Amino acid sequence: MAKKPTEQTRKRLAEGKSLGGAPTKYKPEYCDRLIEFFDREPWEDVEMPHYDEKGNVKWVDFKRMAVKLPTLRDFAKSIEVGVRTVYDWIDEKHASYQREFSQAFSQAQEIRKDFLIQNGLQGLYPPASFKFVAVNVTDMTDKQEVEHKEPFRLILSNGRKSTKEQDASDAD
Image 1 (spheres, helix red, strand yellow):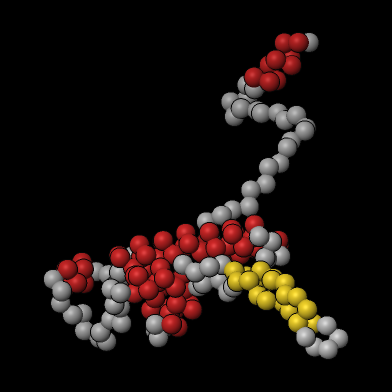
Image 2 (cartoon, one colour):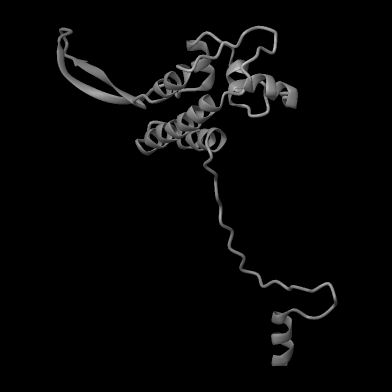
Protein backbone atom coordinates (compact mmCIF):
# COMPACT_ATOMS: atom_id res chain seq x y z
CA MET A 1 0.00 0.00 0.00
CA ALA A 2 1.30 3.44 -0.93
CA LYS A 3 2.42 5.81 1.79
CA LYS A 4 0.51 9.05 2.21
CA PRO A 5 2.76 12.06 1.48
CA THR A 6 3.57 14.20 4.50
CA GLU A 7 2.83 17.92 4.68
CA GLN A 8 6.55 18.58 4.19
CA THR A 9 6.56 16.39 1.07
CA ARG A 10 3.53 18.21 -0.36
CA LYS A 11 5.18 21.56 0.35
CA ARG A 12 8.44 20.56 -1.38
CA LEU A 13 6.49 19.26 -4.39
CA ALA A 14 4.45 22.48 -4.59
CA GLU A 15 7.69 24.50 -4.55
CA GLY A 16 9.07 22.35 -7.37
CA LYS A 17 11.86 20.97 -5.19
CA SER A 18 13.25 17.49 -5.52
CA LEU A 19 12.42 14.90 -2.91
CA GLY A 20 15.65 13.09 -3.59
CA GLY A 21 15.79 9.62 -4.99
CA ALA A 22 15.39 8.79 -8.66
CA PRO A 23 13.79 11.44 -10.87
CA THR A 24 10.23 10.73 -11.98
CA LYS A 25 9.71 8.91 -15.23
CA TYR A 26 6.47 10.78 -15.76
CA LYS A 27 6.11 13.04 -18.79
CA PRO A 28 3.07 15.27 -19.44
CA GLU A 29 2.67 13.83 -22.95
CA TYR A 30 1.76 10.49 -21.36
CA CYS A 31 -1.76 11.83 -20.82
CA ASP A 32 -2.41 12.08 -24.57
CA ARG A 33 -0.55 8.85 -25.25
CA LEU A 34 -2.74 7.01 -22.73
CA ILE A 35 -5.95 8.19 -24.42
CA GLU A 36 -4.56 7.29 -27.86
CA PHE A 37 -3.51 3.86 -26.57
CA PHE A 38 -7.00 3.06 -25.25
CA ASP A 39 -8.99 4.75 -28.04
CA ARG A 40 -8.78 2.13 -30.76
CA GLU A 41 -11.28 0.21 -32.83
CA PRO A 42 -12.54 -2.66 -30.64
CA TRP A 43 -12.60 -5.14 -33.51
CA GLU A 44 -11.08 -5.91 -36.87
CA ASP A 45 -12.60 -7.53 -39.94
CA VAL A 46 -10.42 -10.45 -41.02
CA GLU A 47 -10.54 -11.82 -44.57
CA MET A 48 -11.57 -15.46 -44.79
CA PRO A 49 -10.82 -16.68 -48.35
CA HIS A 50 -12.58 -19.75 -49.75
CA TYR A 51 -10.71 -21.81 -52.34
CA ASP A 52 -11.74 -24.07 -55.19
CA GLU A 53 -10.17 -27.48 -55.89
CA LYS A 54 -7.28 -25.88 -57.75
CA GLY A 55 -6.35 -23.58 -54.87
CA ASN A 56 -7.75 -20.42 -56.44
CA VAL A 57 -9.73 -17.99 -54.33
CA LYS A 58 -13.38 -18.57 -55.11
CA TRP A 59 -14.80 -15.89 -52.76
CA VAL A 60 -13.84 -13.99 -49.63
CA ASP A 61 -15.89 -13.65 -46.45
CA PHE A 62 -15.05 -11.32 -43.62
CA LYS A 63 -15.16 -12.32 -40.00
CA ARG A 64 -15.32 -9.69 -37.27
CA MET A 65 -12.84 -10.44 -34.49
CA ALA A 66 -12.34 -8.66 -31.17
CA VAL A 67 -8.93 -7.07 -30.71
CA LYS A 68 -7.01 -7.21 -27.44
CA LEU A 69 -8.56 -5.13 -24.67
CA PRO A 70 -6.28 -2.19 -23.80
CA THR A 71 -4.86 -2.39 -20.28
CA LEU A 72 -2.76 -0.15 -18.07
CA ARG A 73 -0.14 -2.89 -17.97
CA ASP A 74 0.22 -2.85 -21.75
CA PHE A 75 0.36 0.95 -21.75
CA ALA A 76 3.14 0.90 -19.15
CA LYS A 77 5.04 -1.57 -21.31
CA SER A 78 4.61 0.70 -24.36
CA ILE A 79 6.23 3.65 -22.53
CA GLU A 80 8.86 1.40 -20.94
CA VAL A 81 7.97 1.86 -17.28
CA GLY A 82 6.73 -0.60 -14.69
CA VAL A 83 3.00 -0.97 -14.19
CA ARG A 84 3.44 -0.14 -10.47
CA THR A 85 4.90 3.23 -11.50
CA VAL A 86 1.84 3.99 -13.61
CA TYR A 87 -0.48 2.99 -10.76
CA ASP A 88 1.44 5.37 -8.50
CA TRP A 89 0.70 8.22 -10.94
CA ILE A 90 -3.06 7.66 -10.47
CA ASP A 91 -2.96 7.08 -6.69
CA GLU A 92 -3.83 10.34 -4.86
CA LYS A 93 -2.12 9.08 -1.71
CA HIS A 94 1.22 8.41 -3.41
CA ALA A 95 4.02 10.97 -3.65
CA SER A 96 4.26 10.30 -7.43
CA TYR A 97 0.59 11.18 -8.01
CA GLN A 98 -0.04 13.08 -11.26
CA ARG A 99 -3.45 14.75 -11.32
CA GLU A 100 -3.56 15.24 -15.11
CA PHE A 101 -2.60 11.63 -15.71
CA SER A 102 -5.22 10.43 -13.24
CA GLN A 103 -7.87 12.43 -15.13
CA ALA A 104 -6.65 10.96 -18.43
CA PHE A 105 -6.91 7.48 -16.89
CA SER A 106 -10.55 8.18 -15.93
CA GLN A 107 -11.23 8.98 -19.59
CA ALA A 108 -9.35 5.86 -20.68
CA GLN A 109 -11.53 3.75 -18.37
CA GLU A 110 -14.68 5.11 -20.04
CA ILE A 111 -13.19 4.34 -23.46
CA ARG A 112 -12.37 0.79 -22.32
CA LYS A 113 -15.91 0.37 -20.97
CA ASP A 114 -17.34 1.36 -24.35
CA PHE A 115 -14.85 -1.01 -26.01
CA LEU A 116 -16.24 -3.88 -23.95
CA ILE A 117 -19.88 -2.90 -24.54
CA GLN A 118 -19.42 -2.66 -28.32
CA ASN A 119 -17.71 -6.04 -28.57
CA GLY A 120 -20.26 -7.60 -26.22
CA LEU A 121 -23.18 -6.29 -28.28
CA GLN A 122 -21.53 -7.59 -31.45
CA GLY A 123 -21.34 -11.04 -29.84
CA LEU A 124 -17.55 -11.09 -30.10
CA TYR A 125 -17.05 -12.35 -26.53
CA PRO A 126 -18.55 -15.43 -24.90
CA PRO A 127 -21.33 -14.05 -22.64
CA ALA A 128 -19.90 -15.42 -19.38
CA SER A 129 -16.43 -13.99 -19.98
CA PHE A 130 -17.89 -10.66 -21.12
CA LYS A 131 -19.92 -10.43 -17.92
CA PHE A 132 -16.92 -11.37 -15.76
CA VAL A 133 -14.64 -8.77 -17.36
CA ALA A 134 -17.32 -6.05 -17.41
CA VAL A 135 -18.05 -6.47 -13.70
CA ASN A 136 -14.39 -6.76 -12.66
CA VAL A 137 -12.75 -4.18 -14.93
CA THR A 138 -15.41 -1.45 -15.16
CA ASP A 139 -17.95 0.18 -12.88
CA MET A 140 -20.71 -2.03 -14.31
CA THR A 141 -22.46 -4.34 -11.86
CA ASP A 142 -24.55 -7.47 -12.11
CA LYS A 143 -27.92 -6.61 -10.61
CA GLN A 144 -30.31 -9.40 -9.84
CA GLU A 145 -33.80 -8.69 -8.62
CA VAL A 146 -35.34 -11.20 -6.26
CA GLU A 147 -39.11 -11.39 -5.91
CA HIS A 148 -40.37 -12.38 -2.48
CA LYS A 149 -43.67 -14.25 -2.67
CA GLU A 150 -43.91 -15.16 0.99
CA PRO A 151 -45.46 -12.59 3.35
CA PHE A 152 -43.15 -11.31 6.02
CA ARG A 153 -43.67 -10.06 9.56
CA LEU A 154 -42.04 -6.95 10.89
CA ILE A 155 -41.77 -6.86 14.67
CA LEU A 156 -40.68 -3.62 16.22
CA SER A 157 -38.16 -3.64 19.05
CA ASN A 158 -40.59 -2.15 21.57
CA GLY A 159 -42.87 -5.17 21.23
CA ARG A 160 -45.68 -3.40 19.39
CA LYS A 161 -47.15 -5.07 16.36
CA SER A 162 -46.24 -3.78 12.92
CA THR A 163 -48.85 -2.08 10.75
CA LYS A 164 -49.39 -5.26 8.72
CA GLU A 165 -49.91 -7.33 11.90
CA GLN A 166 -52.29 -4.71 13.29
CA ASP A 167 -54.29 -4.82 10.06
CA ALA A 168 -54.46 -8.65 10.32
CA SER A 169 -55.55 -8.62 14.00
CA ASP A 170 -58.08 -5.84 13.35
CA ALA A 171 -59.67 -8.03 10.66
CA ASP A 172 -60.27 -10.85 13.23
